[in-house]
Length: 159
Image 1: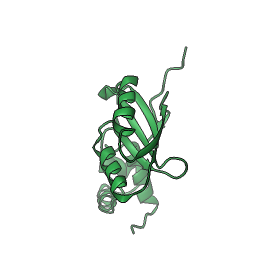
Image 2: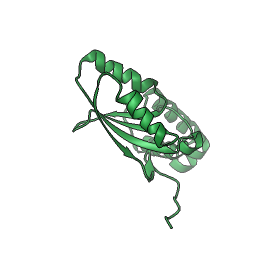
Image 3: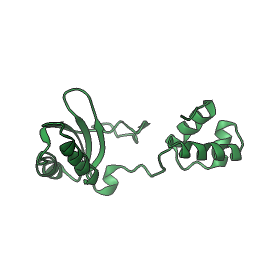
């Protein structure tokens, strides 16, 4: 287990907000030398506390203007069927995030599609059609206020 001190926590927080920070920029913000920040960043990566660096895109940038949250309850929890469900959601590009949950649903899926017709096809032909799925409940996202711990871009007020 990797012990995190205040410097590590500050580095993680800063990189979560802006993964493009250089070691020199980190050092200015954290109060350590650039070489110390570099060593700490490498250590955090090797401990798998930093899982990657990537651009945070709005779904609209990829032509995916509709985001849906889909609760899925499985018919049973036979290992082969659970594994088959896991494989299906892993392979489906419209499924952005999958969380195994407690409560009424077994999983919560975040899905991005071009439009309502795409969401309907995804639910009826892919998710509900899967042999392990017993029940699906869908909510359409009206506005993204905060994602990945960061506020979304400011939205224009409704007129």
